[in-house]
Image 1 (cartoon, rainbow, N blue to C red):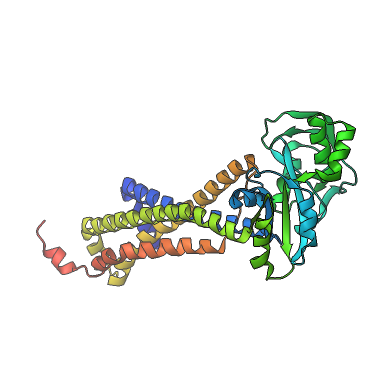
Image 2 (image 1 turned 135 degrees about the horizontal axis):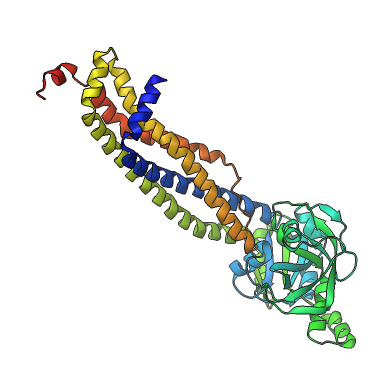
Length: 402
């Protein structure tokens, strides 16, 4: 304990140098912790939201855009597809399940999605209050959507045209909240769910269609935005996308392939930030090495006095190593705290944009690498200065002219 106290006092005897080294080490460790936390949560969120979705079918356009719009609800769809396409897909022998989605409106930035109860079953969603819809213009709110809007079961609201928060409100076509979902950590948390008929009714009223026109459209011109498909067998992965793309106006997007591309793009940015953190750690390690080497030279008389008082060589060397370890452990605590703080700040920004869910409270087993990296770097930086202290020749120091 005395050795620890002495190492601590030695460390802060040069407060400016120690503070600079602490800052560099903390920033480097925070960058690495931030990358680990964000990467792991993004991958976990992608796996959750993909659930049992093997294929997303939409209008002709970018497969990446279709996947982002249909699975994660982070982009606008490429257009609408005929309702008859849903019947074609369900009749295909390689298709096990098809879930329709109709987009186009929002509630304060939260998308209103026309669908079927199968969409909730896909994510094994459960109700926290109320029930599911059983008639048009009834809505079930996701947990985040309910919290952000303050709506409860029995309240009414009007959707806004378009997927942005500033769209024109559909006056006279109010939805009634009949249920609120439990938080599941999936994309459902930030959605407002209703049936397909509600979306059709609201848009027919918005475009001024009369009852006769609506009936005519119901017979053959109804549209949906996207269809989420689950395969019946692995063979479908080869044959079904080709079949879909051969149909007029239809485009298939394989979420597994598109998310792999997306994660590679995200991974490139993560690699840059991780490299920046390692560069900061390298600079910090060199700075600690120089500072300790200079400290050993400046404290030769003090170290010689310790030896004369009976301290063995290993204790003198350990004093230098403990100084580096104290700095590393302090930087480790600050770096982890800063990494979690940055992750929480990013999560708040993404939550305001109804994007992916990221939390600063997430604990990752990979973070165990952070203190190990800090300790290894400290011991490496202190190795040569500690050896110099260990090999200190007391007799030579006493005979040296002053």
